[in-house]
Image (cartoon, rainbow, N blue to C red; front, side, top):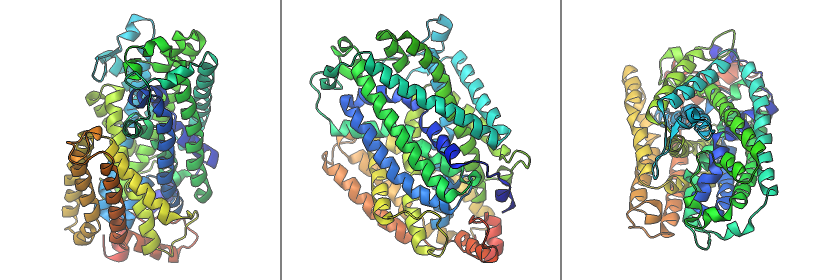
Length: 555
């Protein structure tokens, strides 16, 4: 536990909240309103509200876990504590993929916005492809790579440096989007736009389109930043108060900003642009900046082009910090080499983990060269990563009731069940085949897990497998339902629309109950109880797997 205790607890509640807010208000605000309107028309307003409510229910379950176990990279550890190493590995892999890929996508967003500048060299940074995802040019990728390195260096030296610089950037990021929404509304609000449908004609709320917008338009992608305060819990002062405050505050402030921006976008678009094909016919490369030019707010356009570096870069820096803590947490799960658990004694930063994430970020830049294509991958991986939180927090209430809970969520059984069911719905709303492709991506990493199990002689593997059957069966079931579901969500149409949503809700409830029942008192929790008896004043952080085995004789 020495490494964990060597992390510096320098981050206060407001700095922690700014970390979450800085993650939430990134490239999503630059593109999200435009993407959501293309899918749902004026119904996009409801998509943001619904998305915020769903994410808040999920985030609250993680608030109890984060305060209970105030450790860095906690998001990749909770499934391990409640259900064993296999559930922990699947959850950690999904979470890491969802978070580490945000680093390059934020850099890509900044460069893609530059393509809206009037100079030819800037326009050459990004190549649009009608009907397809656009891509950065080689020069554009070079600019994005430089930004990723800048994020890396700002985090490499110190957590305190990161927290201070991020708080300042986040304040700027909060002011500029709010000012953008107000300025666009004041420039002339065309209320008749709210009667135009996504594909033209009269608007009528399409519930299926609103749900798909929640899952894939950048809404889940944007709100995913609530994880940052949880993953930085190891550096938080008074985590029992700081973590819930940071999570709830960040989501609430971000929701106000995003709804304001969506309303402003819908009302500011010149009506003649909607005449031919509705909201789907609007193809901006830098949405709010181009819209500002159209309504003669040139000063705002200049500000937005500048902020296209500030907002995504603040998020990129935040995720560079949190992903390093996630790798650190995965090493403590016993499924990565020990080098990634090393903490630099002077800066308090897990530097080897940062180097790994830097390399992976470059790989994502190479394979996904546009914001749209990478954001789609992130959105679904994010949804899968949410699955274990609601189940883990309920399981630990049952298997480890004696452990101290600085923050105890009232009404947890109902909130956790709703959170899990909505996670299932989100995964379904993302549409086939994307749902199936990302579920398959979860399977790709299993050889790594089996390697470490074999390395330790498959010790206690049967117990870990019994704790994981519910999650394995759940992913297979959701993939099958997604493929057979209604055509509105990309399926073959065997399950009628409406009935498919009800079926997914029932599946979510069944697997939630199965998941909670499958939890067991894992060796990690038993080792923590023994440690707490010896050192009752220490923070409640289960040891790594080698220490667990020495203390309990099990892994």
